[in-house]
Every structure is written in structure tokens, then in C-alpha cells.
Length: 374
Image 1 (cartoon, helix red, strand yellow):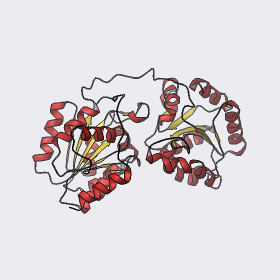
Image 2 (cartoon, rainbow, N blue to C red; image 1 turned 120 degrees about the horizontal axis):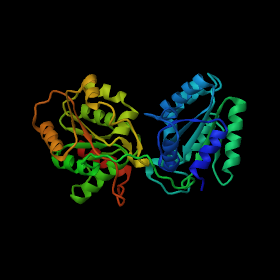
Image 3 (tube, one colour; image 1 turned 180 degrees about the horizontal axis):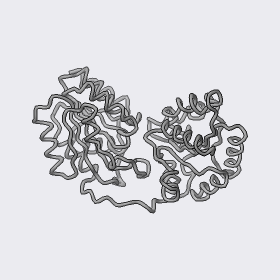
Image 4 (cartoon, helix red, strand yellow; image 1 turned 135 degrees about the vertical axis):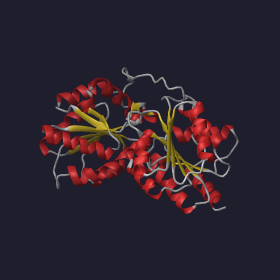
């Protein structure tokens, strides 16, 4: 395994001192080390991977130096546009080091949403003309080669990270939240307040897993839930698409702060249409909990004010069991002429024995579509 400290020191020796990206479970030890040992101005946890590439471009324009962008391979999709239309040699020709976690690597068991991503990870890089190396025991030589190519070509190079590549490292500067509610407790309260025929669209990561387990514990089945196991940041638009076509059914989004930030423009589209049958619940723990607990700005911004500004009809922020139950009773019984949002402040963390959905994505889709056809 590679010691995160040794890897970062190698990059620093090569002149790479700026980092931006979206955390990944395969990079969580590296990201934790960066968070603890790189200044806030030189390590920006971006809203999405495309934004991280743009941050690195701005850094280069200001300093003439090369930045490093880290991401899960699912983030390649978000990054394609700025990689090809901003950084590429046919456009502005700017240097960049990519560090990409390889979820769904062929031959390595992983969740279904990562299988296709893993299969095409290297192909996408080849299609974009980005040279790469898969890090192994020769990582020092590989890193030197990557930095040499970047310097000589003023171009892009990717280092691919397999599962288990980096040695363990835990956040040392992690602050403990005093918020009383856990996300799982909050999800249980919301589920218990749902109407019998409500449809739930839950975002990727822990939220869908906790929803699935609670439905199992209550023997409720899963036909009313769409578990968005991939496509981070898009659950609210899936929900809007359903709500507009099925105005007789209430659709409730179970969102996360990291997902909300990733594609925040979606809130403006919801606000523009403002359907009365859409309820947007944000379980806001200020962290990317599924991939190591790296911080987001979710609890540092006024989600309630943003929702109001883009046109949501009814918004609130809660942080206790009682206030959440009150908010759900209000959403259920008040006459609200538009979309509601409840920003639920919770502390980070999850059960270590938390399971994963036992149904396949296709089974989930088919069950939901059958329910919506009624």
C-alpha cells in the first residue's frame, strides 16, 4: 500500500501543491490526509468534478503551476466537458494531474451502478486522449513519469487508483457535531409521516441504504421507492419528472447536502415549475458520508433562503425530532400552493452494519413503474 503522506510529498516535490475534487471511497485515506495537511485555499472540495477541473484551470492561470483533481471514476462524466473544451491541447492547453478512484474495476465485485463505469474508465481516458497509469508497487516511478509528461506537454495525465491502493489514514482535524439527530433517525421519522400512496425518490449513498433497511424492518416493501443508487445529484430531477406526469401522487425527495450542492441548479427548475405534489427533504450532515466523511459546505449555507429565492413555496429548517415531526405534520396538513422543502440538520456517521439494497436496479424500476401505473 501507498502511504498518503509519501504520495503527497512526491507530488509536492514535483511542484503540485493545489488540490480540488469530490471525495471517493477508494481515495478516502488520501483525501483525509490532504484535508489535514493542505491549507483550505489549496484543497477545495468542489460541488462537482467539472467544477474541480475549472478550479485547477484558474489556479494554473494565476500561478503557472499544475493542480491535482481527485474524483471517483463516476465523476469522469461530470468532468468531460471542461477536460475537452477547456484544458485540452486543442483549446487552452493547460496542465492537470487527475487522480481517479476505479470503482467497478473488471473482475472486482462492486455495486451495480459502478459496473459499467468501471468497464469504460480507461476507455474514456483513451477516447479523450489522456495518458494514464494504474498505480501499483512502482507508484513512485509512475508518478515521476506522470509529472514529466505533464511538464513536457503542458497536458493532462491520469493516475488510476484501485481498491486498497492507499494505506489507512483517518481525519485528525475532524470536528464533532453537537446536533442531536442522526440521519437514520431522521429518515425513520419522515418515513413514519409519509402518506400511504407517497412515492419516494432517494439519492445515492447512505440515504437509499437506510431507507431500504427501514422499509425492510417495517415489512413495507419497496414498490413506492426509487433508490437512485448512482447519478449523484439528480434525484430531485427524477422526482420532478414523476411529479409533473403524475399530479395525483405526492413525490418526496430524500436528498443529501453533497448531492444537492453537486447540481444545485436543479432547485431553480423545481422552483420554476413549483408543483404542489413535490416535497424536497434534505438530510444535511455537512459531509460526504458515503466516501469517508469529507466536509461539504452544506451546513454553512442557508439552504432555506436559497430555496425561497428560486421559488419554492414553503421551506423550513429543523434539527430535532420534535421540530422534524412538526415540519412533516405541516407538510401533510397545511394548504401549500407549491413545492415544499425541509432542510434537516443531522450529525454525520452511520451504523457500521448498515446493509445494501437486496433488489436489483431493474427490479426497483419495474416495481415502481407498476405502482405508478395504478
